[in-house]
Image 1 (tube, rainbow, N blue to C red):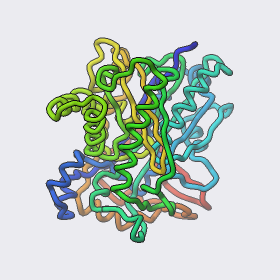
Image 2 (tube, rainbow, N blue to C red):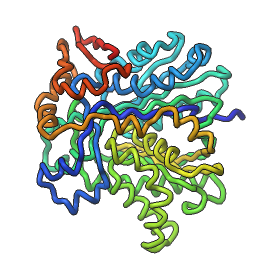
Image 3 (cartoon, rainbow, N blue to C red):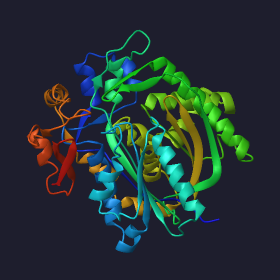
Length: 419
């Protein structure tokens, strides 16, 4: 059997961000409760940024690092998003076009809430394993944005949006999957899946969300336990504490992950509070580094966690990472893979942490201005021209960096420019 997994991975956190503690104070939120979110910053989508620009800007550094021969071996492009721009047309067509990839390439889109990135990744893995085209590669782009337009809810589907706002982010992760998994070699066949019908959160209308926060937490915890149990039936001698040197979780916000890990350690390992805290700091916290700076980016979040684990972990010796992916509605999966020191060498060239540092910090006044105009490019917009100077210093901060931005929508067709 061929080896398979991630050959390269890049996180793109956009142009601008907001300090979430400043947002909490501005909104007069309960600071003690807010601190339990374990959030620091959130990326904020500007009107001329959309899932396509995020996806292309995440993938371009990977594509630019390839030879023409390697580019031509990309025979599958999967976009994973719940922030689509059309009920029929896939954003994968735009992403393939602006990355200059071969047209002899399957391109399509997956929607399955926050599980979509894992769904696309596992589909790509199995395409490589099938060996129907030996040596082929797949590009998986998980990309999502939250413009924070809140749906009018009834009594059941309501959300404590004052605390959802600080954790809702915008971003993308691009993953090159192939037979030379220098970054993350998948444990083939080591998968535990679990899911059922539950109305925890949804996007019942294209640009807004509704949900039940308590139900979502309970579903997440249930799926984490049950997906791991299913994984354990497929892999012999699995121990939650000792089999995995690191753990990467889908991270709606850090506090949710900490709660899930605490529950698993209590139930499965019978661990005491001090042990649990030490284990969290050592095995889980490295994977939260980027998540705490970008916010929840739905299907891409599990891979943002994985990227953080790889960049911040100690891989002087090969180590196994356990991954838990969850998507509302719901579907979940626990899977694993091995990372070596070479992974950090490969990932270093993408400068993920540095790029997050270079984002433009929004003032609260600028942020409110963006919220007021957030409907400018809502789903179904037929014609509009984007004002790139809406927040002048934001666009100024990234000119000349070779990034793609939305400039116009003309008869529903989106047009972009490199700046």
